[in-house]
Image: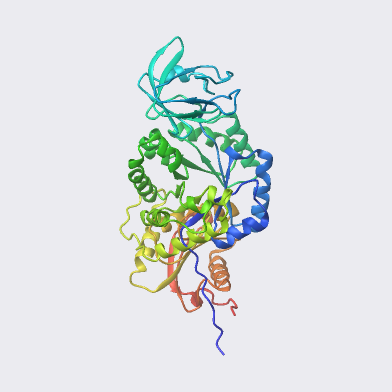
Length: 484
């Protein structure tokens, strides 16, 4: 009797799920993980420090491989509180006045904001968008420390709503006091990623990195691209962050909607060339908040993001407060697997900003070798995750297995396309690394003993980086190790 072994196959595209403090039980998080979730997202705009902690604790009870990402609110402008919760009604052509006083109570056609220099920095002719563009105003004149605007739409203006001023640079601080509190909280609780909102330039990122460095934190920064400044400065921004998120919600408010697809494609391409994980977010399965099945347009949107080269795709309201959270993750996983089956490796991809050329060359050659050899999997050891990001960028059509020397690197690779990560002993010799890695993967049913495996490793310790490549049957790599 021959024992039949079923080979495990994971989807390659990573899925991020927003989890609310109102629905974060171990059972719920496990249900999302079982359907394909790789990263839990906490949206600090809708939680407190205290209510966020159970999300972290329960996620870790499910699996130590799930990465945890928290969004900061970033530099944003909002209307101050109103005495009347209903706000006030405006009709097209009505006058609306802005005045600088962060402590002022807005209402009756007069608006204050949380930014003290709003009137000073917004010019005549600018368009002001309130509540994600629900209300549009045009600045018609400016005098006596006031902005006089004309309403372009009918509707209600309410307190605490967001304000966007497209194509106008406003000197907001890089991080707010609230952001700083959440960053320190993330450090204390060993989170994996900070996704900073409304990144405009490198200075926004440097402020966060200073805090991380002061506390010797390995947390990685994801830049959320949500305005024209971020788009214009994307090359600079990518030099100072771990990865990027195309946050299409606010981006679609700041920039004409017809430009968003081209911007998305451009950012994805730049990230892939520079080995930076890139996330596509906002309304990917929005209809599944209330419906058990997606629209055809949503299916196509997810598929196109993967074709373009996205490493990860994100669910927001679908899993935070939707009726069909588990089904949404399953749907996204199903679409991803179908799309991935048609993706061809990027054999001719030219990587940019190479810091370890030996590792880059080895990765390129191993992916190229899959054209001529029946290689079933790629295995590598890593201290930084760099080799995994190199391999991922080429989009090989076989699995990539990372044997990580630290748990936080294992979780960082939860954002890299096609990489499945494990944690391993950092004190092993080269020979033990090879034998133990292959033994672990065989026991996990990742491939068979007779399968040809491509392995990249280092001969001079884990800190020296990749220096060699081996291609041979898995059984050859475990001589002297008992495998059933």
